[in-house]
Length: 148
Image: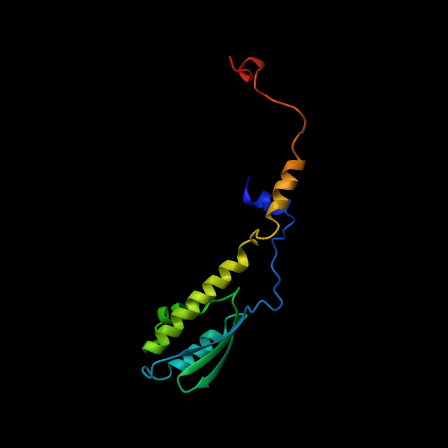
């Protein structure tokens, strides 16, 4: 039985509630001191993206607000690096960056995948059994049913 069929027979929904799901993120991107003026250039470049709110929070930092369904920090930072910006590369920044990348990727994966059958798994078999023909029916030929 296909997984989609099992979900339908158990009465599971495939849509996910968006309200309260924690999909709105606020992240900080830190830049290196050199080259000078890159924070302002990055601010102007990121402000053009739809659904991404950017504000300057420090001399070398920007704060981003976005939906995890639209953007990820990894994609934004990769785009900045490809455009020639140099991001802060301290050990602390690397650790925070790796954790955020993993959390956002996992959350995005969980939001787009269908719900798993955990509790009402027996309902699948009850529904499947009710769709089959019942009675004393055996497709085995008569001569093969008897032991000789």
